Length: 284
Image 1 (cartoon, rainbow, N blue to C red):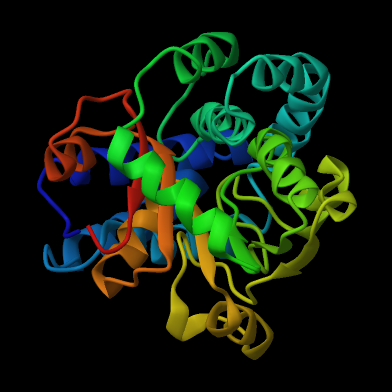
Image 2: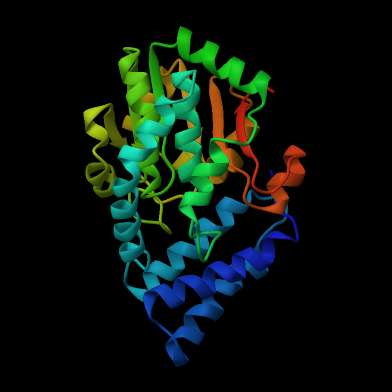
């Protein structure tokens, strides 16, 4: 994945949204905006988009002095927990319980305020349980789950963790040794240990953080504890587009990417349509 010209409006949009969530405008907002926009002006198109947005959001948090998405995360943790019983039922109705868990997990990937201003969770759930999955991709994933003992699950967004829980419970019931990893500190509406606690993930997996605030998974910035779990895993389940952006170039056959296609750049790279649901092996 490299940055395309189509990524630039998204970068600018993230600055605008973040300042709005932080409640900052006027002269102060203009000064912060210009400082963040200077990152875009210096950005290389050879770089992964998530690396540029990581720097942008660090500046925005430093300059605003707040976690702009704190209330959004709290809201969607609550909304997701309200939907958990129905989501479990929907997954249980799927003939293949693992596939039901996968579809439930992908449904939650729409809770992404780095891309969206508004989301329709009910629509995302309906689509996740009706859109086709790549038969080859899912078959390979299922076989990898069957043979794996130690699984590392790379989480994405707050609220989405509750949807992940349906898949994590399925893995637990298969007696898999699962560790889930969240962000080490806030960035956009990505999940942290606080969100993992609210979602109840400790009931079905060990929970760690990756030691940094990078968007996606920037391995060079991750903590020794995370890297130990990363190296020890037989299977790595990677949620979300940013994790795909930052890890796909590794070509690591242990990694499977689960996400909803949410931008034209990723859609073009994968030869998919915006809105498609994806289960993709790292060694494709």
